[in-house]
Length: 338
Image 1 (cartoon, rainbow, N blue to C red):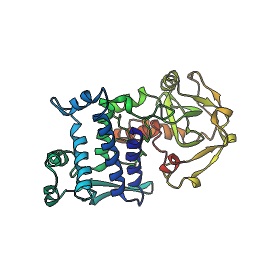
Image 2: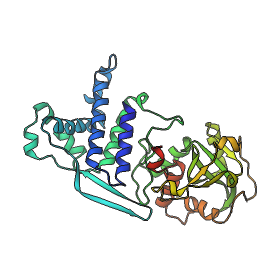
Image 3: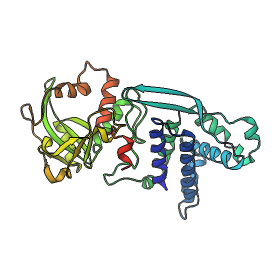
Image 4: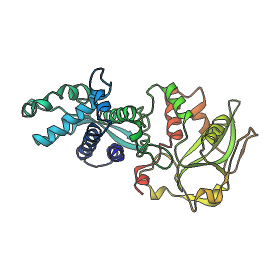
């Protein structure tokens, strides 16, 4: 059930960058939210502890669940569909366009037809959903469940939330992951303390930027890479200690360009490995400081690393770049559906 809820949120976000009916995607999320809520409310042995989050003291995010229940009941009992407002914010450019829609108002005449129990949920809708950006409210629902019943979160084989992170949108600071802190400094610590996104990385060289050595290469998710990476020596060794696989190997001899296979991958080069990375890569157990070197064309790597580390680059831009690379948040929806 939680997998369905997580994927419905991810599908909604993907839909904001396409021509899909956002209203239908919202209703899918609402349905799965209430399914999870009903399941936990009636769970044998755990129902009382779950219901307590809606009592006194009340969980800070509980109103998001009641607000979603209100929307579900409005559509079920009076056949009024609550969809995103027609007024949307369109952002983006050559790197991809995206709609940021907001929750619409529920007319008073529709509300008047509801049962008293559902009417009592209206304040939660007005406070938490009405006028708010839709995806951000979906994230709050997921955060609620992650906080009160963390064991129900569905994770993939890499231990990552199924359906996350969301794909990076250049210039936008909205969270790409339910666990992502809103403060950039806290978010940096969170990112550096967890495994990188993806399933493995291939190290292609080392470069010194502002007197500090950095390792660079490409992050793979299975056989495909949608993002390059750069890390400090210390960070790579920490990642390895967490069990994340880094490899060395002849990248040029084992991969080929694959951008044409992923038309929605607009933010970087796409590489496809002919075989599993582990079949041609040599596992790296520890990285040491060396002089600058590169197994591929070394031009541009200093600038690549500097974008996320040089003081001359605005902090907000550095954070956005770092987040996209570290979380591997450049993987397009077309790749996740394969």
